[in-house]
Length: 97
Image (cartoon, rainbow, N blue to C red; front, side, top):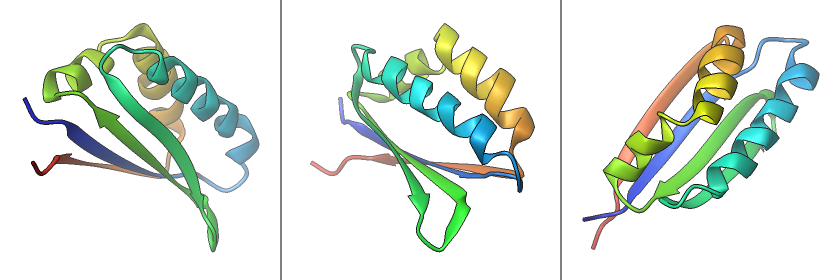
């Protein structure tokens, strides 16, 4: 089964970075501990500190779906981050052999 690369792009509202950035750190730490997670990195755009990109790599599409069912994903992403974002996009790519 091929690996899956996920790129999640988030736009933070003005004045929310201090509240939201610690949630990203908690999410990354918990996600990296998942058995199907191969990498989870968080970046802020150099010219726009409201833009966050998450680069996530999973052993399989099923591992990504398992990630989306974890308590930390539901609590941190769905309950705390998403309601506070201006914009969110998710791109998924199958790793080339």
